[in-house]
Image (cartoon, rainbow, N blue to C red):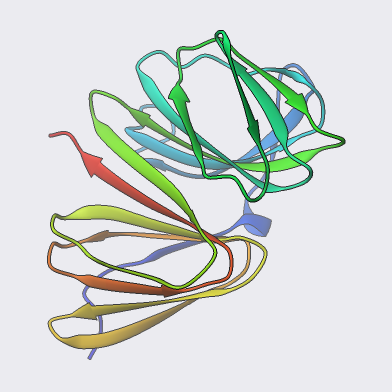
Length: 196
C-alpha cells in the first residue's frame, strides 16, 4: 500500500552554499517553511571556518548542534556553553548576543530556527534506535549525520520503510496516532508544532 505521508528529501550535497557577510563561514539552507522570505521554521547546515558572532533573529528560538569538527564554545549573553559532536542540541534565544569560538578548527553545524509566534520546535541527538507514538499531528524531520538511517512508520496499521542517506534531511507532516521507529547510529530528530 502506498503511504499517504509525503516525505520530503533534501541531500546536503545538492544544496548551494551561501557565504556569510563576515567571511567566517557558509550556510546551506535545507528548508524554510512556508517560504524563504517569510518562514515559520527553517533548517540549515553551516560550515564555520573562524570565530565570530551570530546574526540576531528577533522573536526566533534557535537550536544548534555540532555535526563534525572538534566543537565550539558559545557565549550567549553572559553564559558559556561548550558543544561537541557528542553534545545534546543547544537551545537559545535568537535575539541574544552570541559569540562563537572554534575548538581547534572548523566545524559543521545544524541549525533549527522557529518563529515563536508561529511554531515551536524540539531537537534531540540520537545515537541508537528510537521509537515514538505521536499524540498530536507534528512536522517530523530526521537528519542522518555521516551515516545512513532507516525510519519505519505505521500508517493505518501498514508498515512503511524509508531509508535516509548520510547527510540527508527528510521531513513530513505526520498525523497523530502514528508510530515511528528510527534505526540509527547518529541522527538528529526534530519535532515542530505550529502555534495556530
